[in-house]
Image (tube, rainbow, N blue to C red):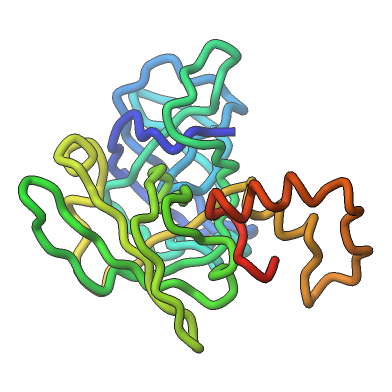
Length: 227
């Protein structure tokens, strides 16, 4: 598990094809990485397989390459990095699993004082999980959703990026049309499952669950019609 608070920006030192997908080597400032530990790379959970001289290597499966932006990473690319939570970690963002739900693209950006307003395309497949003032991980960065614009084929959502986040992540480099990984809030995912979905044949929640469901709706985590 992660929090979506990027610890540092690393650089892809190399990439080679493998029988299972690809092997990435990433240069970092960490000198104490352990074999087998999990690192979120642009929001994708990868396992450290080798460390040498400030570089760690990890394998990405063909599934990961196909479903995330890791498939497009090349040597020299800057990436957001976060190590997995420990029992004493501060939970500064929100719970992030490192399992990407969809990819998206930046459709607009504008300066708002010293901050930046970034507008992202919202894939229809995850639209019901994204709510105003809810949380979302964009390339592994925990962000607050300012506004959601629904549309028949998907829509958009936007986030405000403060100067600190611009300096400490790859969002400063992101250009309009650039691709990003998205992971929805786990609470929204499980709340939707609890309520039932058009794609899941589940029993409706008992009447005793209605106060919880009402609180989730009022908080913006669920749509008014529970889907």
